[in-house]
Length: 549
Image (cartoon, rainbow, N blue to C red; front, side, top):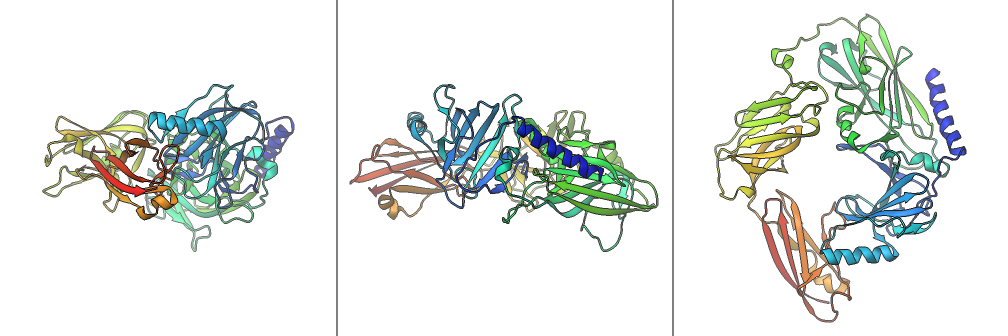
């Protein structure tokens, strides 16, 4: 009851602040306000930084200014597509991502700079008086550009005083209809290495919300929950704003996903485990949205009795649900630390690891907790380098970069730029990391203790024309670049010897597109398109195509 009152008080205070003059934004779109993603959702290596507004499956919807202010920055990127930063007079800045187009003078300025710099990607920071905006003014069109899996508008809200990302939802509270609370899907239990045990095991274990038989534990354990928020009338699921864990009626842990800074993003790798949100805090995790009453959220099961746990889940609008879970205290042997585990890499000190031609140097503060690295080294006779499978095949994320070097066993090519360090998935799929060759070894920065080796890439990318017989009729050139090793890092196109504005509008499909423009390409004649692409190891492909437009 006490926790319910606390949550209610928080939301009442938020409502009162809004009534007393806290900024309220106008809607960015003219369609009903429904979301495909919310603030703080768990993503790979980061929190989702804003709200994803649904656009009814369409692109080209009018995007409006939320208040009075000015355009602060204009960008075109492969990651976020067309991007517009708007600084408002109320102390907040918004970032609109994945747009399909800018409008007016901004659109013309961006296109002119793209031709001037001969680059699809551009970045403009106008002065505050160049592009003032007023509430409701059309500032762009919604789209599906960059790393976007469908039409939507992504909106970040940045607090100007701190530079931190804040949850945009409270600013649109009056425009959102939602009475659906978060829902839990499962529980995970952890045992402290050398200090606890669950069901006779010392490894993390998942359990249904209503297990068929009592869950037994002894010693120090930690809990985690897999849960999502939902909204009325849609099938999407979202991140949970507030998670509170109580044991026998006393609060143990609380997470409130309402703001974070850029340098906190990587802490998500410490807080989460395979989609589960931990209710304890690793010693190297400094994520401010997490709070533990004592022992950093670890609880001591030290009596032969049932321990009653309650999770309270709430969304940003105050919809709340409860989940109850019981752990039965039962004495059982706790595995002691092996000699190797006792000599684990320390989270609060520089860490070094070497094995047969490989060296990994991890600066202080990169580990979230002490880590024992169990490893295997293997190679076929023709391999360029040994393959190092670290951490027993499971990646250990780092809060920043570590320095990795791997010595080469063979030198099949003389050009050292063709070598690169690759990370390997559990199934052996190699992914490009990069690096430079020096003194018989490859050196690179890595952000995980994982599996690594060295590969060679001497194969240029393939340029594949997509339906070239339609280029002239549709006024649109489309190419696909196939590059399976070191990735595409550069591309350039010309038509009849002049720069052609070709870009990657959607990075998910990766297609290179050039919209033919009569201001730059004369109509009614034969033209020659020349394309050059380069991968991460410097391999270059060049192709020429004739077409009529």
